[in-house]
Length: 405
Image 1 (cartoon, helix red, strand yellow):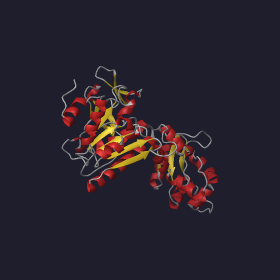
Image 2 (cartoon, helix red, strand yellow):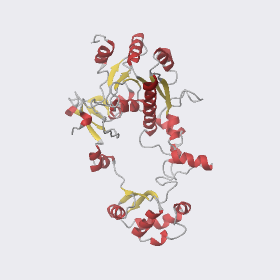
Image 3 (spheres, helix red, strand yellow):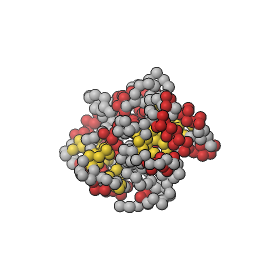
Image 4 (tube, one colour):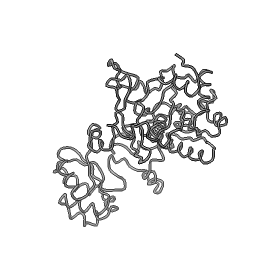
């Protein structure tokens, strides 16, 4: 399927913006992929000594070469590296540092996720490059930030989820603290980084002055504790792990029916009354113990004593249809396969097929960008790059150097 987002002539919001990407793994690449999706030219710098971004080898799933062998495009790598060019440059060498400095002189944005001060010895840190190029927007992403007692500790998504408190809220109440099933601390850090970069770019375009944008996994993870963080700050009481239940809304949970589980989200008292009617428990909606959401929170356990057995007599299809008719929010718990092949996913362009040379079938399948723009649609013009595939093109186009090979 082709639409405006696949058409090279369609303008992107960030057309003409040049991003020098010194990141790897997930948080930084997520941010730079977002910029590339919106039209920026993103040059991803990869280390030829190590074979590039670590995630190229994070299998077991890969796009396959035309001969059927595994390529260097792991599914993990492809998740955050479309719409980029890859160049192989060793920044530990004088030649490599010179290349990066000259590219930075042409860049609007530099993004890096080295440890704090990790680029100082190469002369590629924010203080050095921003002093040389005052209009540069330079973003540093790290685990714990550039300051504080933990600044030198390595940043991993798992550690961020543990340190930042989200794991204490996640999982079965009787079980162990549990991380979210994907690297959400990394991804959300990348999202915050993108917002910061675009804000600094807007300021640069108004004033001509760039700045250093600094973001950390730990800071961003704690910022999206949202209501549970505020619950603690305003009560002094530590939130409990509730599995799929909600601390501020009841009933709001995953419930068992005769052939599996479904999700229920009763958001107000009127919905609760209609829900009770469906279950044949109309008397509960008039009971002072359950009449309001605050009352239901206080009497959560007693209420579940009525609701849980009543729901077990229903099938998933039956209860979802019954609740749909009375406009009570409820839904299925899809597998990834069910989610990505649903009619809703197809209608929204959730899965994208992007042409990829040298790959079996001539394309790779990627998750689409959820942003929808009426005038500057997201583009899917470049598949995630093979390691170093664009080195000659970039050095010749941007630096005027003859091809290296």
